[in-house]
Amino acid sequence: MRRARWLPWVVAVCAMALFARLGVWQYEKAGEKRAMLADAARALNDRRPQPPSVLNDRDRVGAYDWVVLRGRFADAPAVLLDNQQRGGRVGVRAYRVFLPSDAAPVLVDLGWSPLPADRTMPQVPRDDARTTLAGLLMPPPGRGLDFGPPVGQPGGQWLATAIDPAVLRETLKQPRLAPRVLRPPAEAGFGFERDFDILPNTLPPERHIGYAVQWFGLAATVLIVALILERRRRRAIRAAASATPPTNPSARTLTQSQRAASPASDDARDTETKDA
Image (cartoon, rainbow, N blue to C red):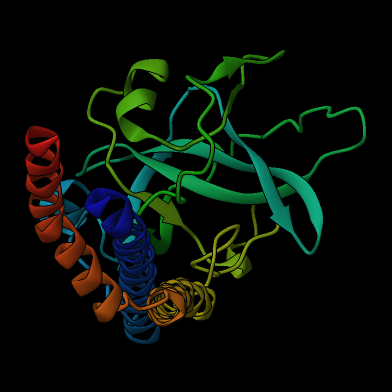
């Protein structure tokens, strides 16, 4: 009985803890994305070229740097990132490997291209005449649903559901591929549609804050409902106790007197029997 009384509170506390943790997680995600936007804005405003060695700097894998690289595009197939939206349309984002003369190979974000209804993949030309690239060195796009390794396409291109440099090193036969990608400005004059939107196809900080408020609200709702149900339960217990009829003390005393007199009556009957 005691276990059944406290079981609803155990369930309520567990639910509140879960909702509160999800709220904290969303709040932390908002903070991370605010920091990303601030770091990217700093690099874009300054546009101060960093040394090419930052391409393989493991301490700056999640950071944003402006770089100027000299080299050439590799004789390697293009990579198409699937399920990318832009302006309400579905398409792919194209990447090619660039080989700097004094740094590790890096994937270059060539921009977004729409897909027709039959999902015919665009052909991504290689600009062999381009020997200098300037742009924003940034983390790969956020990973959504990853359906496995890249899939080969007609013409030798690769279709991927995530840009994972660790996987693409083997796919593209580039074991030193940098962990970040390079996005040149739109005015560079090559590739497809692109800009410096840091959070495409993902949630902005404001949405994460909204979700955090919802999770915290659910936790508060569970607490309020639990308190209301507990109050009703206690009221029901008090009402049941007051409705129980009280025991009659005089009736109890009479019963005890009758029980005490019963042996005397038995003795009297025995005496009468002997006299007879």
